[in-house]
Amino acid sequence: MPDFNLTREEIAQRDIGRTEISAGLSWLLTVSFLLTLIIPPTVQLVLEVLCSPQRVAPSALEIVHTLPAVGRVFQQADGSLWNRVLVANRRLVLGIEEYEQQLEERSWLRQNLLGPTQHALTRWTGLGNEKAYVGRDGWLFYRPDVDYLTGPGFLEPAVLHRRVSSGKPGVAPPKPDPRPAIIEFHRQLSRRGIRLILMPLPGKSAIHPDRLTSRFDDSTGPLENASFQRFKREVEAAGVLVFDPAPGMMRDKMAKDKVGQFLHTDTHWTPDAMQSVAAGLKTFIDQQCPLPATTPVEFSERVREVEHLGDIAGMLRLPEGQTLFPREQVAIREVVEPGHLSWKPDERADVLLMGDSYTNIYSLREMQWGAGAGLAERLSFALRRRLDRLAQNAGGSHAVRQALSQQMARGHDRLRGKRVVIWQFAVRELAFGDWKTIPLPEPPATDHGAEQTPPTHATGELVVRGTVRAAAGAPQPGSVPYRDAVTGVHLDHVEATAGSFPNREIVVYAWGLRDNRLMPAAKFAPHQQVTLRLVPWNAVRQKYERFNRIELEDPEFRLAELPIYWAEEAP
Image (cartoon, rainbow, N blue to C red; front, side, top):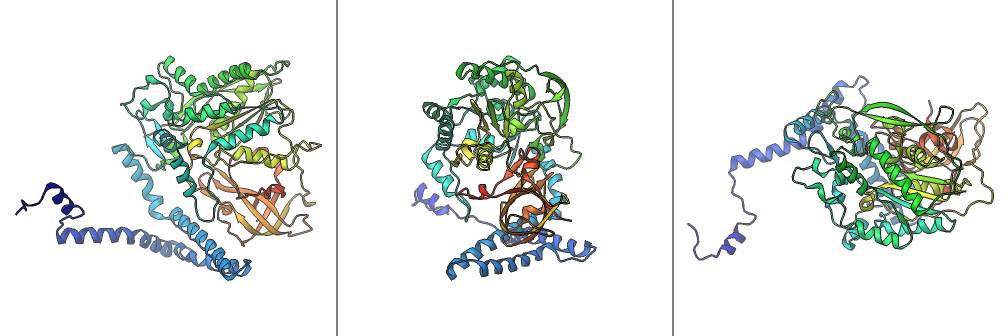
């Protein structure tokens, strides 16, 4: 019987946390939970034991391979016993994380059930996953773009504090406030008489929220984070020129009967939207920092049709042959040099475009949307003048500045003769990027024109052995929009397997992620002995520098002084 002496508040407090459940249902839920925990590793273990033709040890036992490395770290670490224990513990934690990633990557259930399960969820319920949202009419949206708009202001003190406190153990916390890094970069350029134009590019959900939900009225203009206008005012007050493409993209969308400014299943813009922004940027340059007159370059155009399935669809990890999201076809306009040559960046040009994947799309062939028609090419065509380009997928908040600093530290002054530097990045970087301040070395007395190329072995092939001091790792496949990533590795005690090698300590770059598969360099660990085939980085820089690059932690920028090589596993 109810107790009429209790008030409603007292009854509510009494019932909070109290759930009546039968004994049978309790047992059913408990057993189901335990089976959920037990079945996946049991299935994986049985399949690996029964199906392995070499009868190798199951991957579940590979954690024991980490223990000898932990012991070596403990023995070789400097300092007190407590410091050696801490260093060894960090190595153990890193090994456990790598072990968990490998188990997840190799899981039979993941490989065989994830795709069909996601396909069913997307088809029948419209659900995406932790990276992708399913919109209307076959449109897909990248979650960080949506989170940037729906989250709190990125300049709010509580937000900045939370991001600083959310770093991983043993890793330097991110620099969440974009203003100091941007203003410092502006001052670094100003001391050389160079104007900085900041170009934050909006995400798809800022321009096409109506494709995400039918409840949105898009007549009010592009969506913004609550802190964007404050950010823009403060950096402009410091002298930075800001070109915001969002209003123009929204006008184009509305004027063209809501024609898409972004690819349906990709994070990036359409060729037409990019071309329109390049034209707007040309007008902005003419008005804000006019360039000296030069003889116009007579570029020409070549129209090509390209077809591909976007990167957000790839992050859904749908099975091969899925028909929920068809491949999209677009027409790109390749820029052709006089003499019918392919467009190439010119390091002697007085304009440098620094960008991320928005610059590389339609230019970096491995992104599978064509080549020769990216933002640098289209801006060069609009200006009718040659252009220099420094672009790298991902890390728009710091990656290209770090690459610029590294090149200058090695005697290659990419800023020589520049009048304008355009820094393009995805606007979501304002909320999620690492805005570290990066020093720019003083320009060398004599510019080498290119980084120094270390000598190679007389046979043309240089194979070395070395010890891994630090490795940057790689993102988990499917966790980022890019299918390829280059990773950094710091090697010491380096020696050639034949002949001599001039450097005992080097930095190498190697494939960490290739076509959404982890490569051996992604799993390198400190104190591991490796044998690699090297090529001087300067010889292949233009081929590899635009990929997503996972850099080593280098707070004192000491690694910038070491020779750099491209590395592949030796046969």
